[in-house]
Length: 48
Image 1: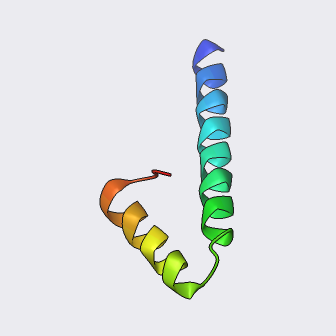
Image 2 (image 1 turned 135 degrees about the horizontal axis):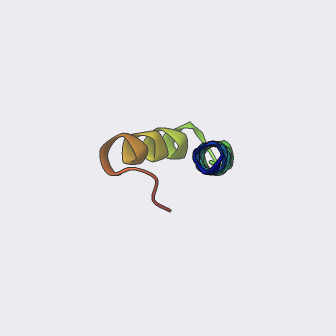
Image 3 (image 1 turned 180 degrees about the horizontal axis):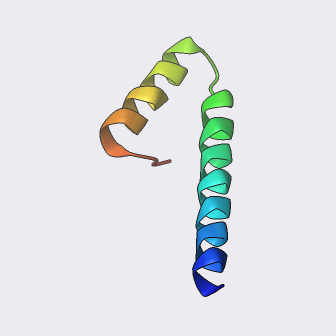
């Protein structure tokens, strides 16, 4: 039961992180900024 709880929490945190990342990308002012953010994610991970 404890393992299931940890798995559920892990999934929830991953989903929340993905949504924050997608919102950050969607808030880009233009295509140039979007491309810069995508490159930043690919090279450094999620940082803003």
